[in-house]
Each structure stands twice: as C-alpha cells, then as structure tokens.
Length: 337
Ligand SMILES: Nc1ncnc2c1ncn2[C@@H]1O[C@H](COP(=O)(O)OP(=O)(O)OP(=O)(O)O)[C@@H](O)[C@H]1O
Image (cartoon, rainbow, N blue to C red; front, side):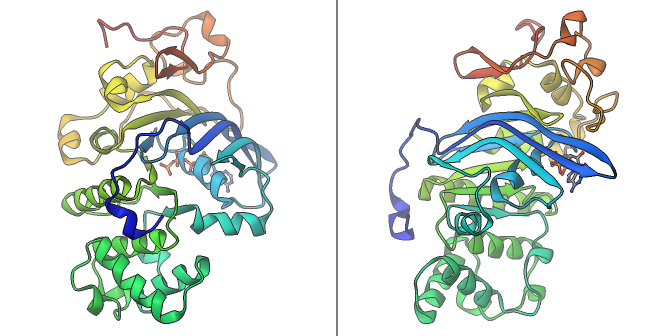
C-alpha cells in the first residue's frame, strides 16, 4: 500500500486480515509455569481499529508480542494467529523478522526508549524504510520526509535533522509512528502508545492514528487499559481477563449492551473524574488470579457477583448474538446493564 493510495476510500471488508484462535502463551518463571495467554481468539478486518482492554496483567501485551515474535525464549506459544492466511505461530525467526515491520508494525508506550538517542530521527526513519523496501538512500530520505509530513510533524525537513532529545514526547511518538509506517504495514499495533502523553497530545496522536487507519485502510490494534479511549476511537473491542477474550463486539454494541459481568465491573469501577481525564485505571474489588495457579472454571468467578456452581465449568466464548461474543453462564440482563 502506498501513500499515493492514501486518499482511497476505505473498503469495509469482512474477510479477516488477522485471525487469532486459541492462542496460548506460557512462561517458565522461577520453576513455575505462568499461563499468560489462555486460549485467546479474535478476528480483525482490514481498515478497522480493534481495542484490546483489560486490567493490568490480563495478557494484552503478551498476546500481541506473540504475533510479533517478540517474546523471550522462556515463552512457549501455541494455537494459531493467521495474518492474511500466513500462520505466524511457529514461524522461524528469519521469516518472522521479515513480516515484522513489513506487514505488522508496532508502536510502544515509551518513544524515548524506542528511539536511538545518538541518531538523527530522519536517519532512523530512512533506515527503517530501507530495511523493508528496495529504495536507494536519496529516495528513502525523500520518503522519510513524506512520512514525517503524513504524521503531521511541523517543519518536517528541519525535524529530519534533529535528535530525539530535541523533540517533545508527542513529536517523538509521531516519529515512532512514521518509522512504523515506513514499510506500509497492513496491521499497526499501538501498545499503550499514548499512555505516557498528556491528555491533549494523547487526543492528537489518537486522531492521527484514526486518520491513518482510514486513509491507508490499515488495521490497527489499540492496546489500552483506558476504556474511554477504546470507546472513543476503536470500532471493535475485545475485553481480556486472565489471558482470555471474555467479551468481543463492535464498540457501540459492547458498551450499550454489556453482557459480561467483568466488563460491567470494569466500566463501573471507573471514577467519573478519571473518566473525564481519560486517566483510566479501573479498580475492581479482589485480585486477578495467579496465572501460575489458575482456578478451575471461569477465572472471574472469585470476584463475580453473579457466580454460581455452574461457573466451576469454564464458559466458552460464543457468539450469543450476531457480532457479540461473550464467555459467561450468567450474562448481565439488559435491564440491569
Ligand atoms: N517474561 C515473562 N516471564 C514471566 N511472566 C511474564 C513475562 N512477561 C509477562 N509475564 C506475565 O504475563 C502476564 C500478562 O502480562 P501482559 O504484559 O501481557 O499484561 P498486560 O495486560 O499487557 O498488562 P499491563 O497493562 O500492565 O501491561 C503478567 O502476569 C506478567 O507478569
């Protein structure tokens, strides 16, 4: 996909670009097995933004790092993640490196740590472009300036020659996005990419991501603990708990017709002031389960007000209503939702 095609009207396609099914990630850690991702399944169509939300430790990051081959050697990944039909799980390192950056790119939370402090930002973008595309240095540099313009960095020709410390946090994150776009990926993963930014800059970066997603018909996965951000920008939402998707639907459907008690607890746990400030770290009474000693049955059971004996058996993630999946024996009734 090229920038030249950027003005193309996005096509709403239903064939998934990414199909994750029964993804599992275990870590060997101090003689124990940490079950970080436990049968995660979801789909993402091209040109859509999917938010993956959940409390800290629910497996959001590990679940996407597994797609990128960015897990340490202590991790074992099983299940399936197909990107445009290509199976990513078990892909040899060399092939994974080819896909990473080229087909899937990622922007992390901390641009200061992701950028090389000793290199001019323009050179870093140029390098990223040349790693994936057969362009000579001059053409790649021209393209780098074009990308800086695309991510709406003011005075891109001048910024090209600057070092990361000369830029603000928001500008650095724009540079990271430019680097991620260098190879024209089909899928961009933003892993808490705006969390360290102030509210105004956060909104600007999110507007930029949304605009790029639409103009380039790119799929975006937004990993966030901020439900307000997910509700404002994403078209689809996956709610994760203890390494599983527990509810999945289009955003409006999910927030208007919450069915999973965990999602409702997440929503209910957001204090109003924080909701307005978009600084959302929901607090639900009780603790998430120990991932090295997961309980039998529904993992939310010990914290769930609706739990019964039936919950000792794990509920499957089923499509109970068209486009709305949940994993619960006792879904929230419409009236009380
Ligand atoms: N290298 C590792 N070895 C052992 N356990 C790990 C490792 N990396 C992650 N984990 C565990 O996997 C679980 C899921 O982590 P993950 O980072 O995906 O959570 P998250 O939902 O993204 O949370 P946060 O919002 O805090 O980043 C956590 O309990 C974490 O401690």
